[in-house]
Image (cartoon, rainbow, N blue to C red; front, top):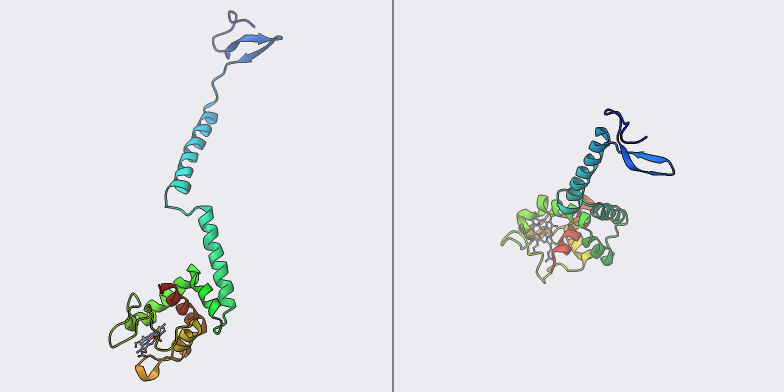
Length: 177
Ligand code: HEC
């Protein structure tokens, strides 16, 4: 079919022909074009949201948080309050430490201060180099568990239990310089 005898409402043909094969020159349908534009806009928004802004966690960050939580559960299931190394490991785990932090804020801050620096006449500094009742993690745990009754700290063992005391111990260790 040549250009001359083409009707106006028929699709246009490209001028070339190879072995008698000709090619239409059609406008792509709107639904196809809008789908294409839509995917381009989506890709920009996606790229910005997931890779450039801090509005959402990336997959790597989500994975890290998930691993941390799994690790925290494992640690919580293997609590051994005589094992100092385990306490240090717990102090490295953000999930564990943040549980300890909320316990601290709820029960301990009133006497030991918002930054664990102690409050004169109420509670001791927990981040300096001095420990009155022993600085090994297992000792710290035991002091919290049993309290220091004659000095005004009650025994926390029966009140908040082993797991919470382990967490708060990990939190204290994580704050030490
Ligand atoms: C009513 C105030 C009070 C509260 C609440 C309190 N403590 Fe104490 N804490 C003290 C006092 C008093 C001592 C002992 C001071 C001394 O021996 O001279 C102490 C001692 C300690 C020690 C030993 C410090 C050392 O140098 O050996 C640790 C650890 C400790 N507290 C942690 C905690 C934790 C964790 C909590 C929360 C679960 C808590 N305390 C809540 C008052 C308090």
